[in-house]
Image (cartoon, rainbow, N blue to C red; front, side, top):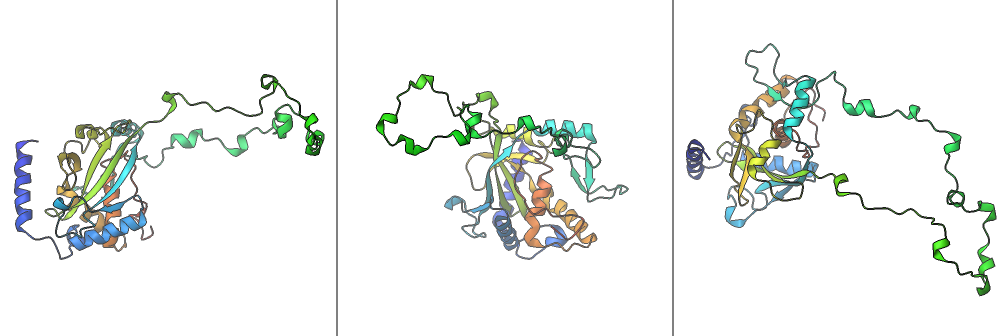
Length: 318
């Protein structure tokens, strides 16, 4: 950790100790949350997305201004199938990045930069390789046979009555080796055929200094061994790696964790809220975390966490 970051953390900690938490709403004016608004937004996230839950954390690390049972939010075992750098290379080849929420002719370009996803007008690989049902060649000779004939037995009309076997003399002992197998044997796949992927535990805390949510990333490799925090940078957009993502102590859990630094969260959320208002959408504070997680997806584009409520920036429908 560089000296300037250490000094900032000391200053930040001092300010947090001597000042009280925000109690007055400035959601629309500044893009920040009061403590009670953070809890309201967290309750809505948990209600709409069951993969998220509230955690109490260690008692010694609990913040007095938050409910004891609602210290932070967490979702576990989130898949991360690919490294962010490989996705960005493909995306650059397909059309590059684009700006959300800003005007193309706006000199400030103060919008929300999306660094992943497929631009409009491009066709996904899946669309090209999925066959049409009309193209399937179904022939009569390929029809499924009845079970007895399929396994080499007699047709259904020739199946003997079980009553014929009521006498013990009718049971014939046969060498099992000479009997035709009438079942399929499944074999274990080779290890190379099993898809192994990184996973993440993602937690959201309330940052009292910046008065916004803060995201923390705890990674695990393909064998479920903890990732060194520095390796998390491989799953972060290169526009944000080592700039807005830092390695710091988690306020509730032991050890170092990668974190999306919250210094610009308020400004970005304010811009998104302004865009909604300009398009006739009335922003609601209980949906704050859905908007927030949509923004964070541009920082960690390949970590597939759930923010099910798809908040449309162009209309009031979800």
